[in-house]
Image (cartoon, rainbow, N blue to C red; front, side, top):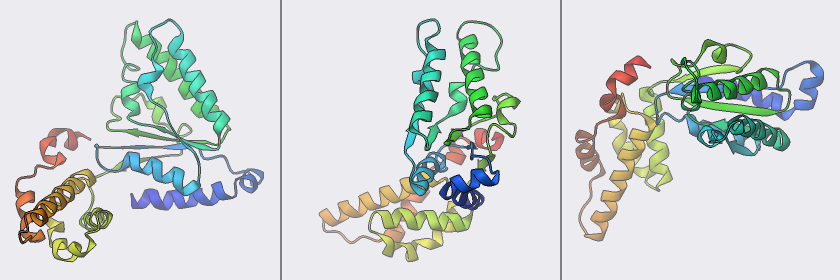
Length: 252
């Protein structure tokens, strides 16, 4: 995330001075592919990018592109591209892109042929587009994606979202406590940072949500509430994503 934020800062300077950048010979930023396990902040990054650049955010649902009639799916992807280019400059967010193109590497006909044609249309557009449509594609697993999709020229850069470091865990914990007006709990709870290694951002948020719920119930019942002891209890009974899906995480 730190590397990605630094990379986006560079692109922000180009976006803010796009006309001058184009005259200078700089290419319009094409997009990025973010991959890693669910709950690591990939989708959030698409929203943040659009807000930072003050661009409209469009979400392309690949499931809605596929139609039941002959030629409908190909027409749908062309329409989606035209809409994005008409609204440009914008950020086009494609969530879990590997699921939309899941049949592209398989042999056989039927729906697989349709997906291959959609994939070909999208690939050509990514390569040739000159309009300022910045694509933010997210994927949980890119091992099934064909190599031509991942080569330079389609996307400006690929970023892998790993499990957060101990320092990042502290930042994530503080953000979710602050969001719920409980920032004062951060100091007594920051000792848990090392115990939360292997937890995703979504896991940490789930712990904080449960902690705040229990604090609210204690207030209704007029009971004493100790955030540290309660957090310890919640933590002991919680299984993070990296434990419940250990094999998948190791493979990624």
